[in-house]
Length: 548
Image 1 (cartoon, rainbow, N blue to C red):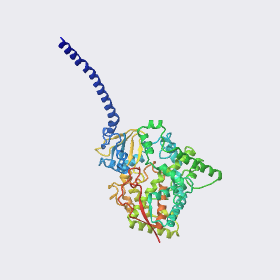
Image 2: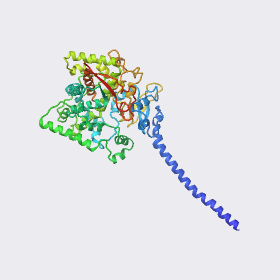
Image 3: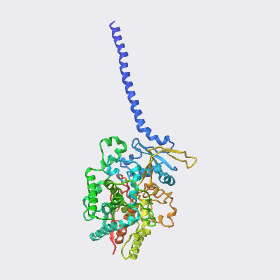
Image 4: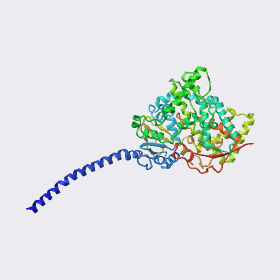
């Protein structure tokens, strides 16, 4: 009996214990299914968005999409755009993912024009990175505004960037350029780190033309205005990148935590600077033809909206600006602060890098430099040693060199558009089907890829200003050259940027030859830490030889 009882007890345990384990295993299986389902729904499923629509796409890395190589600092943003552009050859468009956000990259110039110009009302906005309420200094500037706020602000600002207004600012820029070159002559400089040098020039131009200040960043290298400007435009640090990507991935949490792009010290500095300038000018009746003056006129309703004078074209790269319309709202002093900051966002590092690349190419191509200097000397001779606005705009070879610089090294590697209401891309051939673009979809216009596509620009790595001469520019495929964007949301400051580049190059090359030296890196890689194109290591050394 003992044997039987023990056997029965053992037998009973065999039936009881498995029931406990079965429930445990079932719970684990259910938990695994739930986690797997959530993972599939939130991580894997979004990356099949374009495939389900019949749009060709690559194989995006989980969660990060095509941005992973940039996040890991393995590729530059230009490389990211170029790879996305080429991942599905032979198509007018293809799909990619910014983290989990589906993005349609447009490759056909005619389709780009259709979307950015003809059907602009469907794609009027840029993607919002930082909400206005989270950081007003960022969110109120023209680039970040969307919807009716943008439509109200653009006609207010447009007259400030017409050719006639640029003529007013011409002397402020030229004065700054002359001063910089004179300082170089006094120092007998034999070499410069171009990006740092041109950043200081761009800073002083911004101080003069946007803020009404007299700043000398070549003599006082550590001045407060320059340091604050560099801090505002430096996006290589952790916190600014965290804010930008945080609002893309977890916007609700970032809003709840009140995460901002700029520090309170930075915001107060520029607010106080502009408010005090406006107050002083009003009290003392000071008139200075810079951006603050033009925006003060707009605030007081004195600015007349005018049609652009297309006869005064600042260059081939200039985008046409239609400034007719009605000013429908009044602007505040805070609006003026935010719009003045556009000069920092677009005009500090980006202008410095563009001028650095131009000098690098001139140092590497001495025959091009000599031809450009010959045009400069001829212009000085005709104008009795002076440069005028009309004379600068009449320099054709200068414009060719600047245009080619902006082709090879565009200021923005891409620009985006956001679909505001459902839109259908009609098929262009039997292999295409109509594509419905849903509201909220992001589209990329891959500027750097278009500029480097051999279909549009043969031998794209070759620096050849003759691409843009009278005989060749008619061969350029329309809408394949977009250094300042396209359509109503193009860069409002294209004329100002071209004027700044040409004036500094004029004064610099009138006094110096630019040459390569042992510190000059000829085959540099692009930085993997910045959004725009700049050399890895963020330095570009060049030699200067005074012209006797």
